[in-house]
Image (tube, rainbow, N blue to C red; front, side, top):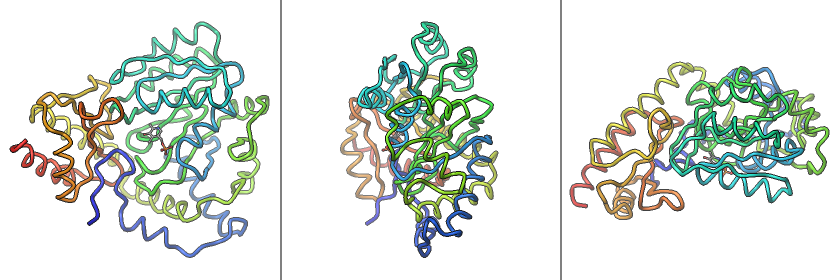
Length: 356
Ligand SMILES: *Cc1c(COP(=O)(O)O)cnc(C)c1O
């Protein structure tokens, strides 16, 4: 039996999307691929409100996240850490041989503009990494306010992970001045995993030119050169790019405003449900994620049993990430999910919880 995915990644994939992946193969140096590539990158630019370069990388998100630090950190990187993925990004930065410092706040807390300002005021850094929506904790950091701070530091290149937020709310990449916005497609886009998207501003490409050791697979300059011909440096995951093309068409058919509202509505529903059923919310207002809810186990429910019972009823449920396992649970509400899907799983949860 297929368990319907309510875990925060990968997200349940619609049958139409799976079908698009069965499109007959084309060669990536054929004109058909260039047309596909151009159509997809143009739509991504529209979605992200940017005219700057958008690249497609065949990897999970961390491939492009590693590529970004390899290409864009010259002097020293400030990694802002407030959960599992941002903590790991610091380790990845060090593993790439870069000088870097981690600015850590407790899991469940956001990264604040004040923290970013105080780090950058030292003058030690020429790049930062930040995760907009920490999927491990369900915390969304205040990107517009942070972006305001970044404008004070024109020599600092900003690398922002929007893996579990891009498309669920408005993230105007150019207006915010994000130099490199990175995401994988298996979360907010609800595609199968294996494709990462990243943007590169002029400032980012200029930086990359002076940074040695960019490697080959994620060399931003290789991506920029290939992009001139609507192409990728090496063979891309063409089937996933077909799926992305269809998903972008579906996103624009729904309408961006409607899509953002659908996510806000689902988040509102899930937060209320959690509080009404004796659980708490890990994140405080206004830092609660719109794409997943991370609940604290205030009523001391047996979450392992809840997960098991839900599995028997056909639902994949997450009982906490890393050190939060058993202490929290997370329910995703992103991608193609609708309010009715949440009503479905929460009805089952309420019934199971009566006996837990
Ligand atoms: C899932 C996730 C990642 C890691 O993505 P992979 O595709 O597994 O490399 C990174 N950042 C965030 C915010 C995520 O949610």
